[in-house]
Amino acid sequence: MKSMTPKKEDYLKIIFELGGRKKKVSNKQISMSLNVAAGSVTEMVRKLVKEGLVHHEPYGGISLTANGVQIAEELIRRHRLWETFLVTKLNYSLQDVHEDAEVLEHATSGNLMDHLDEFLGHPQRCPHGGVIPDKNGDYEEDSHDVLIDVPDGSTVEVDRFIDNHDLLAYLAGVKLELGERIKVLAHKPFEGPIEIEVEETGEKMGIGYKAAHYIFVK
Image 1 (cartoon, one colour):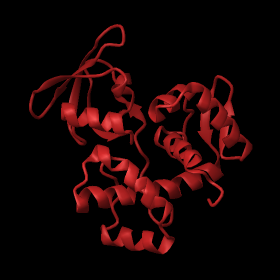
Image 2: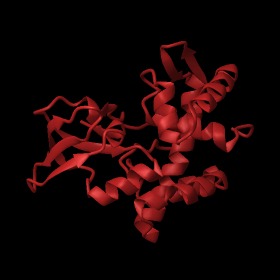
Image 3: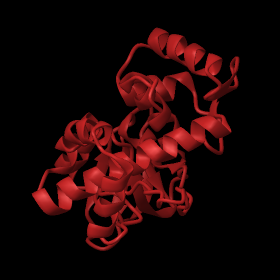
Image 4: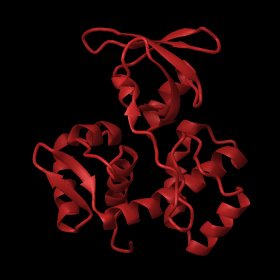
């Protein structure tokens, strides 16, 4: 953990969030999630492969090694406990929490982490729906089905959002909430919005094509 740079940590966390513990994640998904150029992703993935933290098959995607998973889980635990604290105890808005959680996670001992976990009542999910591993590394598996892949006419529940400032700011604007059941009405052509209807209120809205890749449903 000590030789990890914040940038490498960000890559491990996002690969984990995108499902890289169980499946292959594409360069494009990583570059869109982190708002970085595709070339930078290729370069960083090469370094992570060299350090034994990720597997990469050319044209086949990227997944975490056992060592990569272990480090990602620890980073995710720290980051998401601080996010939970900042949102629930200090009234941060969801889209503004990431940066300060990032600073705090790097300055936190394991002992402080355990006390923070206890103070918060051992939360299992962070404010944007992601799992929080417990101190033994146990957690319920995340859903990795994304809104963009849901067939028209299907009803699903909004499960979690990727931890990305622009996405969370966008979702705050359209007022899509975790736990809502939504019916997918239509995928508009030419990368147009996904038309949905919120089951409880009957409200219809369009979710942007890019955003629909980072809204996980079950």
